[in-house]
Length: 482
Image (cartoon, rainbow, N blue to C red; front, side, top):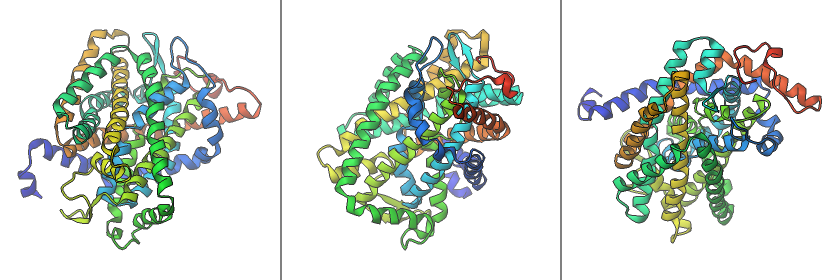
């Protein structure tokens, strides 16, 4: 191991060591365990409130301080639905085999309860900053737990993650797919993406919300439509593919059974990267919404996890597995299955898979889908970084200081477009892991507040009321916007 590290650059060594520490087996177990615990404590709200999830999308409108619930939902989907749904699924299959998809489903189902808890907390402890609602883990850590140092640690970690570690994954996938489809130079793709992002983010949170509302609807609908068509054309193969996923997940498949540990690890890893449940990013979007009760936004955020993983990620997985156009590594430098020699795992797998079904448009369709998916995710990252900057400086905030996060954010976009996929994803995993560790500990401490809020919502619904949140009656302190 020492000799191997000696042949790598400092950045490669840093990525490898950091990810080994952050994404240990302890963390994998923690993520699954927390999701299961919250599911039990909420009596599996992800099943009980399916009807409410859809109804809440269009029940309320925006106001002077907050975006509408649908816009907040779209902003959260923008963060969840990104390159992880196209390139991330392909990477999970490459590293953990088809069984990784099953564990992505598990972490999504359980993670929807986790998403509910963190979104409710984001709403409860939100604040008004310069005319807009702001919130997130840093806010509920300080006001709910009372640990300012912990809140600052999360805010700084999130700003670094969302401006340096994470944006490059999105621009890398855009640049790789554009190069594969149109032979565009990756550097110029990165510069173009950074320039358009600049035009939008300078317009503020409401412009981001409006942009996400339009593009998320379009990109998700078009991608799922393409997937439905491909699934329809291969409907007779669905049982066999589902059997392959499940058998690989539990180590009974003849080809992939030997990497069950990798299937679990990469399924959880890419599942969290994709749907962000527990990561602490979605509460920022949830807090921006204008609503009468925090549980409403929590229910919507739980639903967004379903949209992300159970719909979009599953669609990508089926497209890839139908075609057989993928490689699976054995963890020892070789392959258990190799149908695309010399092709790096990621968006190229998905491009090739769609091209098997639609040769004329496969590569270009994925390139444009990734452009929308990854672009809106990058926007969500900027919004999250900005929210934490507002938290750190509170009333002393000067808008010139926004360039403290804008400059590294745009630089990361350009750098990510030109670097290798492995390096970009490695840095992204560090960012996701750091935030998730800090946030999961916080919501475990504060989860009872979310449970009390859920109970209040249910009681008011049973009485035939439109639930309205009154924190004083529930014994919840340190709220300023209710």
